[in-house]
Image 1: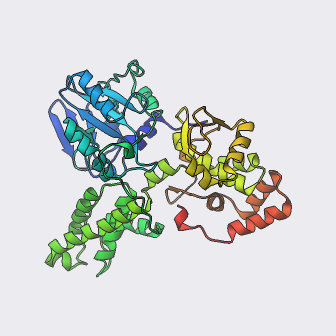
Image 2: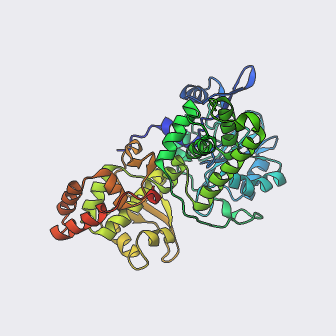
Image 3: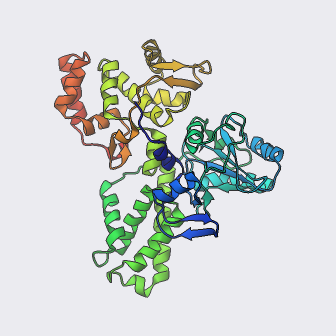
Amino acid sequence: MVKDTPFQNYLDTFIQRIPRYTVKSKQGWRTKNKALSDMPIKAHLGGTYVVGVLSRWYPQYAILDIDARPREKAEEIRLALGLDESNSMMCASESANSYHVLTRPHYNGNPPTIRLLHKVLDGFGDRHGIEIFPQAQRAIRLPFGPHQNCLDPEYAHLDQWVEKLYWYAKLEDFDLSLVKDHQMELDLRTSVTTLALILQEGNELLKHGLQLPSSRHESQFKVLYLFWRLNVTQEQAETTAWHWIQRKHNGFSKDILRYPGAVRKEITRQANTIWGKYELSKVYPDDTHNSHGGYLAEPDLRDIIQICGGSTPRMRFLFHLVKYCYPRRHRNQVNIHRDKLVQWGNERTYLKYLNELETKGIAQRGRGYEVGGFSKSLRLDWKYKDSRKAVLYEGRAIETFEDTVKVVYSPRDFRALLQSAGTEKNYARRFVERTFQSRLSATHI
């Protein structure tokens, strides 16, 4: 039942559209100072010409760019980082004896920023004389063009980009925290509230510029916040915001005319606040939020309610399990750490709920599962829906079962679903009242 197009999955994984991209034709590389549209991407995949892109703030891939080395040496470099065919793909690059090794990075189960990716891997790259991509300022050739053949025996037969993408999606994640000789990151969290109004106003300001006197400082912040939500790197956001305020102050800012240097420094300070604060808080841009934390569709909610018989703790547990598996559904097995399972249930119940789901034929635990340890192999037998039908609020998947219900159903409809699943009438009424008595929490999106 999954109807996601391969092209959309490719866009979600590799494409950063703004602020610019590069193309290579017979005349060489050229920079296009505009947003990247679908047409050049399709031309790249079709082999008409080559497209290069910059990094997102939270990239979903990493590339070891290995040049001028025999294949054997490239394999040694790959293995030295802890990569093999299970968590990476080696592809041919344009020149002889040049390779791109693709992998799916995370850091202790969390998406890494481009800054963290390079903080961990640049030392390795320097020691081995290779470059790490993507980068914030230099474009990298998009993967899976016609002349970028897969070299691993498991993937060497793949011809079409759709096939290469399919097997790339099945790769295991590569944990950057296991890379030797880098400084460990602290898991710091602060309280953050996201406001949809800021996002909307940022869009309007970007299009039309300042609208009122003495509004520059606040408007800059909203435009920068918009870029953060779009997963733009901090450096690119600062540069674009600086050009924007120069062009579209509309005569409402005296400072941009009198003290342009001070305005530029202020943009950097504002960006440091936004990008630093949200990174430490583990609050992510929209696409990273959805691809890391997961999502689900409205029919999934109905299935969850029926399968769990309206039991509140079981519905919450299965909600999180399905939601987490959605963006990872193409993998043969999904790795879920015990800590997440405990968070979704509790120490006493999570194994009980897994056993119940296994009895119903919904969950299958592989041999790698260890009680009290790491769930290395969990597979969900679920009728996944088209991810374009995901339940989103202002472009973001909602984090709790109750808040998702409030977005999708009326109290009357939700009560009817609970009762149809076997929930006792009075309990269903009380649960509906508790669920709908509070407003949607901004911290849950």
